[in-house]
Length: 269
Ligand SMILES: [Zn+2]
Image (cartoon, rainbow, N blue to C red):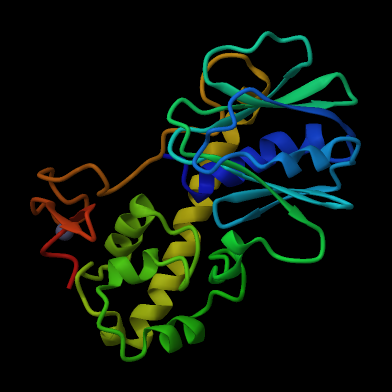
């Protein structure tokens, strides 16, 4: 599943081909995505894409009259191809550009989304989102204030989009391991020192993943493969039963909020 780093790398891969381009036509071959693609998506035709912004795991294709909201869901990906490239299975949406290229959306599982929002207001999907993890709005004071008195376990807490966006399951596992904090600790028990560590680690884990994905930018203009999906160096995620990379103790696996959780019972307290 594409996480924040994959979505950010997709933005970086698509933007140079899309920004400043006029959308000549949008072709929706399959409107049944996670939500039905609205008729209003046609409003993008004839408009210039002024910027592509990422908010949480949404990509916002801004135009002077409104913006398209694209979510990659479980299996979605975007590519930039010559206009004449024949669609294949699961190629559900094409955005034809005046440059003679198109932005093609492929999504085998169809949990992704294409939505439209008129300029001047936020789409409801974006309304209740917490701060971006890589901005200064996500800081120690903020995290401590949010955590104050909360009994929610820390792993669920940092994965809550209303607290901070884009810390998916992989990055929650990795960040708590690197911060040496037990995933089941109540959020309200977080000390200042731990909050400092956790904020810094979340920023660094995500930044590293985006850098690793940067090597795949050329994939966005190739016809095969899944651009935006990349292998990352992970320490604990998916490594239940293996030795802890720090102390050698066997990594333990549990479910928290139905999500696979791996931690070191020795290092994480
Ligand atoms: Zn350990």
